[in-house]
Length: 133
Image (cartoon, rainbow, N blue to C red; front, top):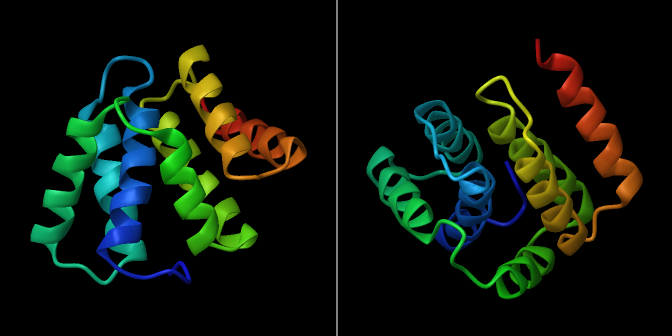
């Protein structure tokens, strides 16, 4: 579980996860499934709450204030939790068995805004690229 709790944080993180899924202009069913799964694993919310959060995140797509959301996430999560969250972002990006240029660039921008080092970003990218067949 992430140290920050509740629907507010789940909505913030869900929006960022959806932004990765939308970065290649296609939010696939497998990406949607991973987003649901990660929110279920990390938050004590009902299935109905998670469904609603995912619908909101999906509607947000790429039309949100990245700065405002990442400032809040940085305030609510410590660096270790943000690194764990980066792993979730990579899981969504690679859910379809690909890691597209658009997804990598969105991941790079988000991890930079989340104050995660470039070294940690590259290490995570290499780990997830090696999992893709």
